[in-house]
Length: 240
Image 1 (tube, rainbow, N blue to C red):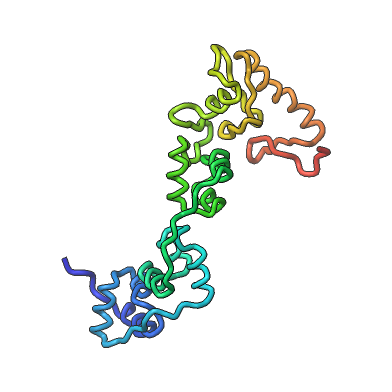
Image 2 (tube, rainbow, N blue to C red; image 1 turned 60 degrees about the vertical axis):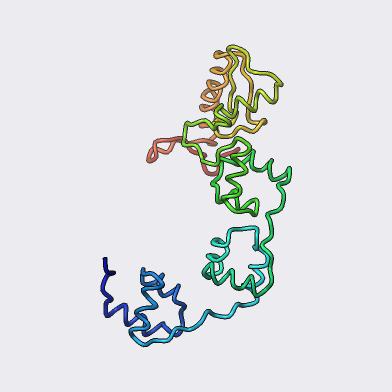
């Protein structure tokens, strides 16, 4: 099947930018393949500039990120193609460094934040690529997917808050024992946010105590009810 016809507007763009932009950038702007662009440039007898020289800042970024992030990610940050990046790396005699070993501090951060923030944010926090962080988290039995509202986080097929509490206790949960999330966030399974309840009545009392605090919070103007949104909100200028 033949490709779509070239329009007068596309030809005008090629004539205007052929000497300033690379084939890859022209192809991106036109939504066509580099081969298609090259063929049209040859037909129109237009020259194409070679790749632009690398600046000192670009070279510095390449040296810093080389081996720490995927080539595609580095190229995107620099506005270059992957082939340009790899050619420059050869010119600089840069070896593709292996990623550094995982530290105990990094593993701690993954346990604390995996599933609570986006994979991209977690990768940026650790200074590693999202793919590498995802593999590490899975190897630790953690999911990097953020749970939806009301969902529990799971680890190796078990509810994570149960796994964490059993680690604190050094034993499995006994019949009737339940776990309360102190701040009400079911996704927050830090040890400091979990409280072991002996049974349903104790767990219910913990939740009911929050409602009992509502009246004094309203009276002191710490909390207010937003009629437009139909929900309780922190009151601006409260005495808390």
